Length: 383
Ligand SMILES: C[S@@+](CC[C@H](N)C(=O)[O-])C[C@H]1O[C@@H](n2cnc3c(N)ncnc32)[C@H](O)[C@@H]1O
Image 1 (cartoon, rainbow, N blue to C red):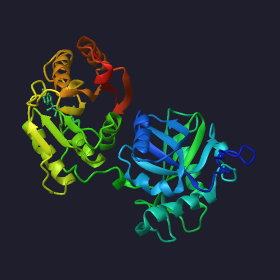
Image 2 (image 1 turned 90 degrees about the vertical axis):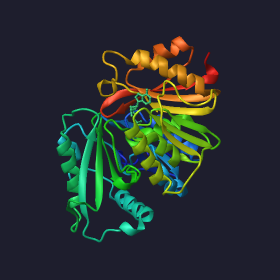
Image 3 (image 1 turned 90 degrees about the horizontal axis):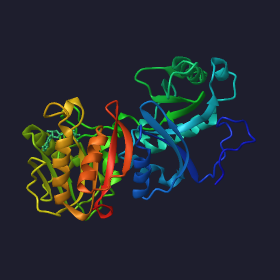
Image 4 (image 1 turned 180 degrees about the vertical axis):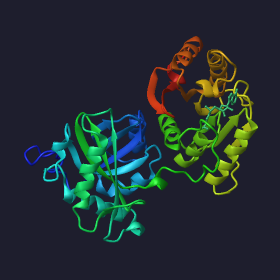
C-alpha cells in the first residue's frame, strides 16, 4: 500500500493512499496504544500503524484500515474518540509556519472527512451554516502557543463564508502539537462514543470505561471464560466485560456493600434488565473469596493503591497484595490469566516474586492523572 507521497507538497497535502484504504486517528488514554491495537485485532480489523503521537494525557494512533471496516470502529471500547486526519505533521515551530496562505492545510481532506462523518452518522448532517470549534492538545509546552495553533486552524475554517465558530459546534477540528509539528484532524465521534449508559452512579476513583475496557482486552478473555473482578468498585470492569462479548460466567465481588449495589445496577443497565443466571455480584473479602480453587479463567482487578485506596494506614498494600495474590492464585486455573492494575508496581512485583508468579508483562498507563501499571500474569508461565 502506498504511504505518503514524498514528491507532492509535504505535510499531508499529498496523501496518496490505496483508494480501498482509509487513515483514521484513534485517540486513547496515554499508554493504551497496545490495548487498543489488540482490540482491533480481536475484532478482526486489519490495520497498518502509520504513526503515533504521544501527548500529555493521550496517544493518537494513526492507522490505515480497509474502508469497508470503518463502521466496525464504532464498536471499539478502548478508544476515546475517532478522528479523520486533515493535514499531517505540518511544521509548526512558529506562528509564521501556519500562515493563512501556507500550504499546510488540505481542504479536500476536510471535505472527505465530513463526507465520512455523514456516512457514519447520517442523522447528524449539519446545514450549510456550519458552526465549528477548534481544540489543540500537545505533548509539552511549545514556542508556538496552543492558542496560536488553534487560531491558525480556525482561520482556515473561517475562510468558508458560512462557517462560524459556535458553541455547541456542529463539527470539531483538533490539532495535535508534537515535536514542532501540527497534525490536524476532524473529530468523527461525539461524547456518546466514550460515554456508557450503565454509569448512572460513580464512586470516587472509579476507572474510566476505556481504561477498564483496555484491561479486559489485555486479558484476552474468551467466550468460554469464567471471569472475575474481585474488587469491582463501581462495576466498570464488570460492565466492560459484558460489553466485550460472551462469557461462561461473570463474578464481581467487593468488600463494600455500597459498591456491590452500584455494580448490580450497572450490570442491570448493561443487560437491559434481562435476567441472566451467569452473572453473580456479591459482597466478599477478596482475601477470602467464597469460590472453589481453580474455577476462574480470567481475573481482572484495579487494586487498591495510593492514598485514596490505602485502607490500613502506612504502606499496607505490600501485605495486602501478598494476601490478595495468594487468594487470586488459588482461584485462578493453572492456565489462567490475571491483569492487575496498580501504581504501586514494586509492591506488586515483590508479592509476585514471593509467590513465584511471573508478572513481567507490564504496561504503563495514565489513570486519573497518575501513571499506573497493568501487570499481565500468565499462570502457565509461572511457578
Ligand atoms: C481501586 S477500587 C476499584 C475500582 C473499580 N475498578 C472501579 O472502576 O470502580 C478498589 C475497590 O476495592 C474494594 N476493596 C478494598 N479492599 C477489598 C477487599 N479486601 N476485598 C474486596 N474488595 C475490596 C474497595 O471497596 C473498592 O471498591
